[in-house]
Image (tube, rainbow, N blue to C red; front, top):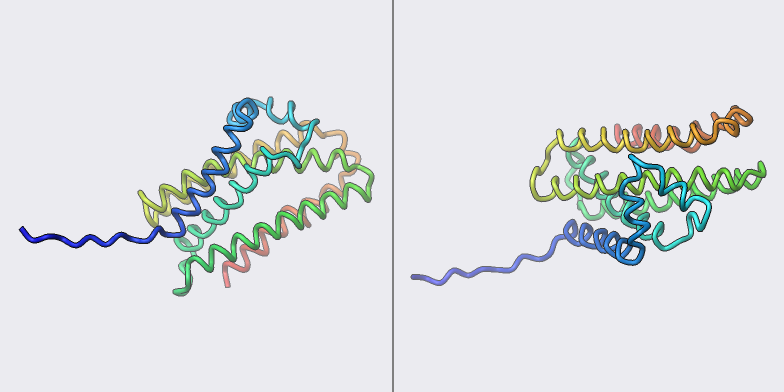
Length: 218
């Protein structure tokens, strides 16, 4: 019986990314277990937003850990969408992922800064910060779906368009629930600043996705 030489493969960057993102989620759960339990039922119960929207809001470690988890998985999910649906030219996949991650981080920071600046100018910083907290909370929850999807696309259903489309649908539903809660809880404020609210939607919510869609077409 002849011996068989087995060479150990190097750990690929997708596995490292998934493990790193999972680490942030585990740390958040371990350090803030009670808060995590409220967060995990977010789409079905508004308790998490009600309890923590009035406290430390954006600048707390639980929210920061989950936002990092979200950014890593969102970038990886968009990478898979790019790879499966767009089929770009043969380039380094890691470079594409890093580019997407960098763009997401820059976009998030710039968007939050512009939103808070808008709140400062119109003297409604408290309401705007509540908007941001609610939206980011639901987006962070969507990252759980993205994580599962990324695992499936990386190791189980490689190149599956069905998995991509189902995941996109679920992500839209979750964030739709978030937007519905925003509109429901801030009806008077939105009615008072309806014109500015429409400008806000067009400039900071819809425009970035239109730009990304046009970029992906090219």
